[in-house]
Image (tube, rainbow, N blue to C red; front, side):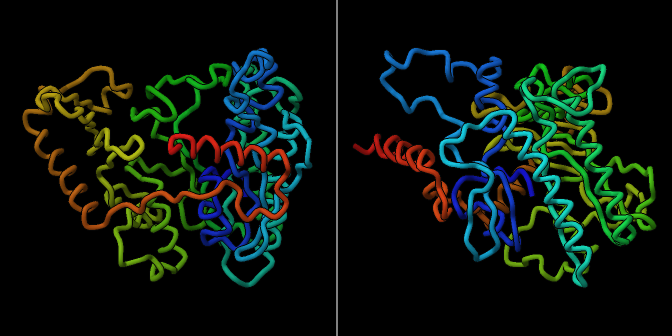
Length: 390
């Protein structure tokens, strides 16, 4: 339910990747709230509309958020349709607000449906909020902060509260694990009006500094995980897969024919015991290239090819959360080779178990009610894709 952001081809959609049902946004907030009609008018996105079409040669250079597909819905193996968007309709802040409320309402509806059954269930709900980049059509909670995202965080908090209350009413609160977490660092550099400030950790989304990769994460399981407990160990998002499989008694379904990134962190969570945590390092990537390694409280920024590794930058994250004061001499003299071994072991495993290459296909293929303007945008994309071959 909600944001998916894995691609615009069928191979990437949730209902084709193990989910029985999905109602999801095909694209992310770039289309939906950064260069829609209202955002262009407010100057959130520049260059999309402030030009003279008469003197423009390439009419396909600027994307039209209204021509792109918005929300699709379907069951596994069944037909897929775009919903809540008619041919010729413009995408704006009002449509974005409507989408977000609809995702919340559908998530609540699905929670009630699944809770009423006899089988264990997994409900994934990724709100597009708090990302909301325009002042147009805003309502709901406001804060002294005044930031566009900070205000919407209060609405997300209200929605979470409604879900927790519903779980109590449905009688499933004590036997349901709830995880609330972010998917990347804050959005400050893309949205200075967000109200967020990178005070403790430097950087944000797409950065390999701690501000780009650390996220808040909360887990709730009454009677099993102690309330208000804190786990300071390294936990990676891939650990949620293996940990939840173990807690749900489904670890026999974890594949054994490939390298699985996640480790089982159930003991650390259940006992609030960092000595039971099973991860002491993480390799941080940018796209498909490793850029940094964190081992315990130490972080190595990997030097690029051709740079002398002796001067590689190490940071002590306990003392320097913003990664501003390198301790290369103090750590590199004894620890440099140990970090090299971590990376070499990782790369050797990738040779044994190579990454699956990305899939390529035709955008929106298989959606049964594609709008004429959307089909025209796809046709224009095909022309641009084939142009280098001509």
